[in-house]
Image 1 (cartoon, rainbow, N blue to C red):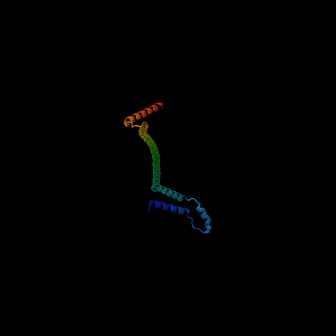
Image 2: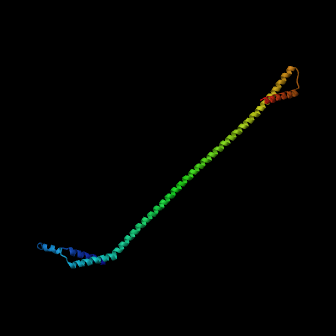
Length: 201
């Protein structure tokens, strides 16, 4: 049997002895009550010795392991709290980093959108300028073509006018005129008329 078991049985025996009431006849009940509350110094000494022994045994063999277990438990709880705090700090840092990356992504997206808009605006202006230049070139070509056509038409009208004038003059004069020489004279006359009209304008 262990020391703890001996101490516990001794304490139990002392408690039973101290609190046990002897079975006495009814006539001796009054004296039994007096003896129940009577102080027995020997029993008190043994009770104190038993309590002190039990206290020593508990201090020697039980309290240190209990305190050690409590300290270990406290350390484990503190370690868990520290680990939770560390993980929370890491989570906060990761959250802050994620928010910063998200904000940076938004800034980059806005920059890309702004750049795309600027590029689209530049392209639109370039296309408008190119279309305007092409339109002006087409108009200039059309004007040149119209001018050539007008000049050709004017030249054709001159020739027709000269031919008609020569034919009319031949009939009026009743003789055949020299076509080449007369044509040149008529053309020179028409050119002189054009120049004089241009000078008057």
